[in-house]
Length: 562
Image 1: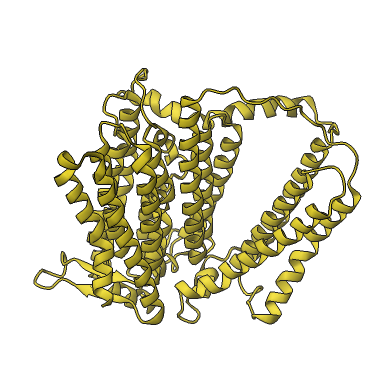
Image 2: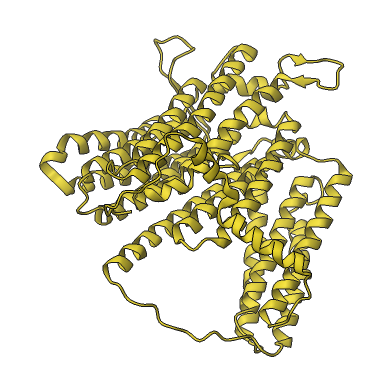
């Protein structure tokens, strides 16, 4: 029964894609019903599969009659179950949305066929129990992504976006193939169940440079090579250059890409968690890259004026956070993050597409609103916000520690994660405080609810969801411990980050209340320079276009549904 349900989940989108292409000429735009029906069936089966996994054990199925090196395998554990529900659920919503949004487009039938086929390939990626077939799905995503980005063949900008995507993604695909080849030569198998047994027993392969300063294990070499595939697929700096081109595709494609495909890097680390969990060097590098990408993505997002470019750099920043969590050894938290990001980013893109289309069809000048400056000092609201920011998170953490026995102080990764929980709740409080200048019990009550919700959500994600994905005792904790920093560096990072955040809050608070901060002139000049630099995403995309002889310099004047 479990195998049948899994096969229905995976094969329904494939059958839908074939039927759409087969019947498209006769049914026309009614083929959307086929895509929606196939995705509805797949989503229902995925939910049932996840329930069966919770109640039972992982599913491992091998297609017999073929050599072990190329035999297709299904390996569906709790990680696969969660990803199946995410992929099918998001794809179902996008199919329903596209049925009306794409009406009138000449490529209506082809679009739905490709969208269903992409869903099938993503499901193959997350359920493959054999690394060779995982790579095949990973590589197929690259070509399908290029096809969907360049969906409008007469749009030069769309064609350039597709070509740029292929060039960047190919670099990561080659790295993944090389890494898989090294895994086979080192451990003698590509079967994930066999590899898990070896990795969990502590197998590290040969060690290079024994006794020298550059001594390195085979695990570290393999994971560092595979990291390149993560960086390209998940748009880490400077490999994010393909991401901005996704706005040239139809909005449903952008939603599917930002809600599903860019999350593949987090899934890959979790799929190879025992391997990454044995390489502290790789985890430290992942944290540094993720932190840098999150910072650049967030700053670039704040300078954009186009709603879709804002969402693009928001995705870049969120993927940076996801990679940071992987670098902390918080593999399960990265999955929780990518699921949350997939749901809200798909919603944001679909809504942006609707509003852009509405603005084009119904041109209405925006209503002018008078800019109101915040005056006065809301003492009651300010005191509530200060108390909640500094005291309430500590109370929640200590209460959780005593009631549900979360080991808060055992690992650095957990402490950093809780540090981000504090930052998130404090930012929410600051935003709520700026709602008005007068004391308001409604704002104060909303602050309390916000802190409690954010705090306990982080705690649930840190405890329950981690144990859900990694139920083996001590497994998740070992990943945190592997990612631990030097204690002095760790403490310095926390102190500097906390001081910087508090300083920025003080500046924003003063600005919100019309206070002038005495900044030196050189700092104001630097501020303008940085604003322009981040407006252009540090000119990385411009540099790539300048070095790319195939990049066009003009855009098509035709109008498309994007």
